[in-house]
Image 1 (tube, one colour):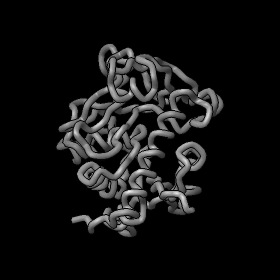
Image 2 (tube, one colour):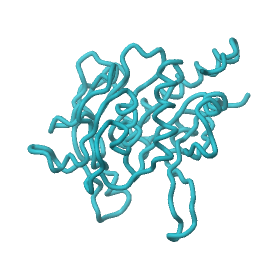
Image 3 (spheres, one colour):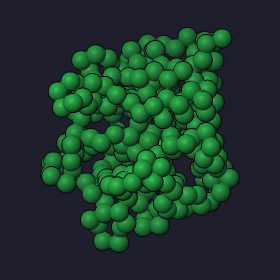
Image 4 (tube, one colour):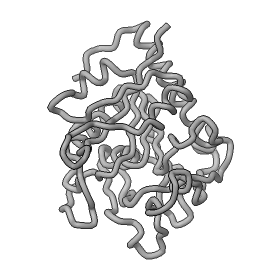
Length: 259
């Protein structure tokens, strides 16, 4: 029996500063395949090649990955500045409507880092371009030096809401996470619920209220060592269960064409 398909949102890169590519970290595929027990499928997030309707037909769920380019501030009504960094407008054009369509239909997604921010923007929220410049905020960026293990090491506590979705899933009100991001949520999107905060108040865990499907998203990177980490594993296992449930329902009742 074939496994359900999780579309992993890819990022655009120039290989050797010349050759255009779509790429995705192998740790994303590893977490989807070996923890969520789904078939990972890398998506070229570019409207020249794919559209939301096609993706929702081919895939049962989506992993909204992290990435160096940021959501363009025009997507939330602001002008770009140097602090906003690099952009990937092609990815914006796919992921933002994809999030809204998944929320409406109930198709599961898991948002990570940039993906977490995409969920907020897709639902009408805004972002800070550089949270480490805000009074009282810590530096959440990836350490510039060190091994991959050191860069993805656990660095701060995330306090989860008592009795909330993440508390029930993870069995604790405080967890330790890594942190590798520069931007953060400024204003919440409609129906977006913050279910966890860093010690400096930065939103770290969210979901979409009253959505019919799995919409959990986190600001940290749970794909790192997902099979062994006590926070990452249940998160990816729950995502896999949601994807399998969607696939089973789809096979029992064919999904109507999305409009």
